Amino acid sequence: MTKDYLKNCYDSYKELRLKHRYINNDHILPLIENLKDHFEINQIGDSVLKAPIHSIKIGNGTKKILIWSQMHGNESTSTKAIFDLCNVFSLDDSDNIQQILNSCTVLIIPILNPDGAKAFTRLNANGIDLNRDAKSLTQPESIVLRNLFNDFKPHFCFNLHGQRTFFAAGEVNKSATLSFLSPAVDEGCMLNDTRKKAMEVIVAINNLLQAQIPKQIGVYDDTFNDNCVGDTFQVLEVPTLLFEAGHYKNDYAREITRFYMFQALMYGLYYIAINKVSGSEYKPYFDIPMNSKSYFDIIIRQAKIPDSNGVIIRDIAIQYQEVLKNNSIDFVPKIEKIGDLSSYFGHKEISAHSNMVSVKSNQDLIEGLEVDEIFIENTKYSLKLTQS
Image (cartoon, rainbow, N blue to C red; front, side, top):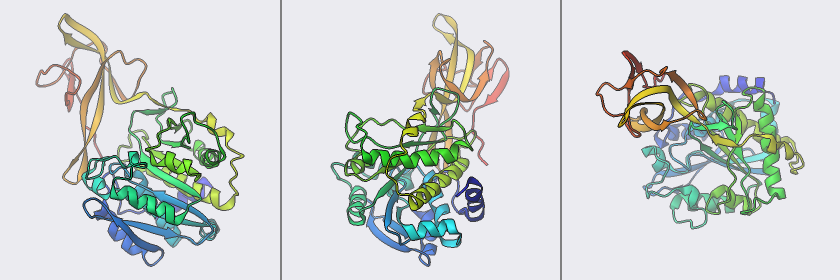
């Protein structure tokens, strides 16, 4: 399974009815209905607000992989990639696809947190982070996932998430377009066979992607938390891979990242299908750089701003706040930090060259201020994000 084959699959079968960042049950239920002719579809439970939670079962092989997306309702990129993948499995009859279908049974929850997806929030309708509820199991969505895990008895789990734009892949000026993790099994981050198996699959995926987006793959923090689902399933001796959809340059709709997430999912399944994953090939996992919080969406360099003692020269960091408005996501620019930001990178950088920076209303430039535009001397710069 080559990158060229995967690109052809994506271009041929991409689910065009899903796009941008706001994805909820209203968008996917018609797609699930269409998949009933190809796969086993079940309603496996309900959310707090009684929205249906569905599963999609693909293939009939002995290797069982459980995948879930939008545990956090505002992390939708991998949900788009899931339906791209479903289209491939329903329409492509190549040897690559047949190998997966014959070797694996893949069980997918496309949206675990439909209430959070509808409201575009991380939390569920009770204000609970489902990824901190693995131990207590206080929420209906958490119970749905755990029951499915217990009944299905997977050999691997893919835990799909999205990460914010401030992550770099290491300490270099490279945004983490995708990040992965083989979660810890204890506070000492012991390296056991279960973790090694997850690491081996991540290594295979990383090898595929590095040829396309070099130095844009990171490893997520592996601090152990037994309230997290991935850590819990790893402790239960099921190799679990965390997938984090991150930022690609100017791709705030996460459509380019979607393409790489599609490849990561497809190749991960293919690798498991054609290999006996023992964990023996885990060592290159430790060559993947650790994520660092090194980015802001915009940095205005060397800005002269008023101060109680006159004027000072500082850098100004702008971060977009994602706000649901009229059934789409509005990116609201806010001042996140003012100071010496020489150790940070900006996805966009504007040099003020030590000139005065102000806003139209002549408000004080303070952290937390919404700023659609700035003036450097008399030149206006729009900070609004233009989405296609």
